[in-house]
Image (tube, rainbow, N blue to C red; front, side, top):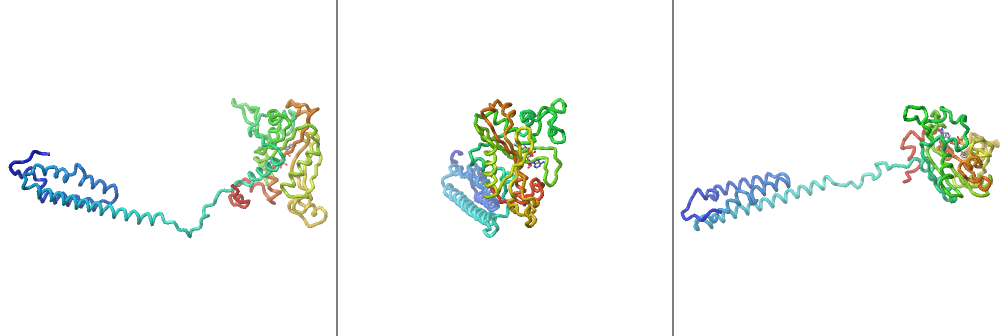
Length: 372
Ligand code: FA5
């Protein structure tokens, strides 16, 4: 602040002259009324009413005026500040009203719009069936076991008693993983079935073993209505003292009943797998015609009027496999079974083409329900 003027000095008080105060007031009012946003209004307030604004700086000069001019200058500046303050408050209210109006329009919720327009995802029917199949066995006391999809050839073939020249090892059936140095074989394959998980379970778990293992498998099969190069199986394995084919049959019947309802007969016919002895293929009575189509009833699309549907491969664990896993085959015996999940889905839901399960068309999945 300047020292009080003894003599009235018009130069020193130019800032407080009525025309100058009026000019500052007009500039402030114009800035405030022209502010189009809260930020601009804040800027206008700081520029015209803030501590370093011309009006506030000028008011600091009032003390330097001769007494006879102080009161009048004080009133003039005070009035200008009051008017600016009022204009600021008014503009603030206008901007707030604008904003509230915009929010009402922009954020309006039309409660009449359909709430389910955005399709919710659905789990894939193959994944749902795999869980359901596993649940049936978990209910019987089995545990879930897992193994890698890129599997050592030893687990996929050797430990399962596949001889070195077994046709399943041929390039046309198996995807071999190339070696790092360009070698044709790395000793690894994309597992061709879930049976290597049997070996992993027997090597890593204490006896007795009761496990199921759902998972992805790979075969160099051409894609057609019933084959896919990538598909799923669920494997079951029980190793305990005194297990027989009757236990295997009981497990399979319980499983068929849980999946397809009571009263369907099951049938085991001799088959061959290197890792089971004896081996069998499992069929169940057709759950649609209950065998009637094969007894002269009307034709059945599901079992192709055979009356039976093949659902799995199975057998008693080959003692050589038990031995490869360090299990005393004189004391323990085991049974195992393996079932294709896509094929089971096709049987259960009357699908004609396995390709529907891999096309990724959500309309297909949705037909099975959007289970979370
Ligand atoms: C096996 O894979 C044996 N590991 C099953 C087994 C386990 C036998 C334990 C004994 C004891 P198989 O090659 O038959 O068996 O295949 C089993 C099922 O996998 C078939 O019945 C079929 O449902 C399914 N499957 C096989 N290849 C394909 C494919 N390319 N596409 C879709 N499903 C397939």
